[in-house]
Image (cartoon, rainbow, N blue to C red; front, side, top):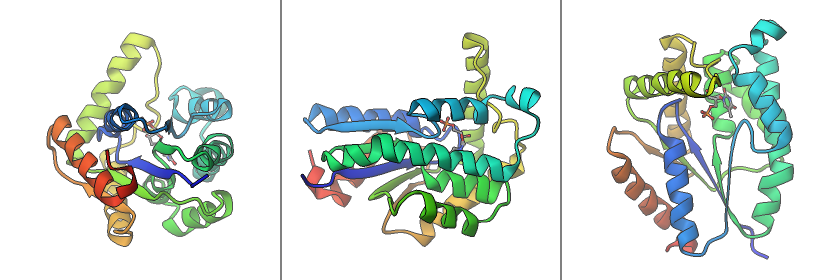
Length: 224
Ligand code: TMP
């Protein structure tokens, strides 16, 4: 059985990556491809628990402050479980795996945002992710102002409608998000063969078309 394809979506909060991931999945599935989608943190039962600890802004009320290294280690614990339980088996079965965030998020948020540095994140990746790198990463980088505005509005809406609150990260100040943004730019420059950055504030439909073109060009075997 040939190995499938591993595509990750990256970008700051509110960059629109989740919408684009869903649209790409539907497009590929409509053409008969087997597609597996997941998000990080989350996706497995263990990962969902880790997600609620890491993202719920009430966590630190009950647990106390979460140390940056603990936050990093929990992100990788989530990732290790997802690789073992979902990603590897799906790739071995020849599926296209679309993953909403992966190690680049740890490098941007924990490495740059929390100041742990890229080296430590990349060493953790080598230790935990078993050499599993994406074939392609779609990095959505609309302007920082646009994505921050969208992320904060969405969180307020979710908190009102569902009582759910995933804004532990979104309480951070603008300089945290500037560091994340620049880290993503650095990753794209460092690894142009893997990372395709989409930098503008185009419409959802325009970006969707760009993503289809990129996927077709970069991975001809899955042209639809
Ligand atoms: P999202 O599912 O809405 O993208 O939210 C996930 C949040 O978790 C987002 O604020 C980024 C953060 N995160 C990290 O800080 N490090 C990581 O490694 C991952 C996967 C996510």
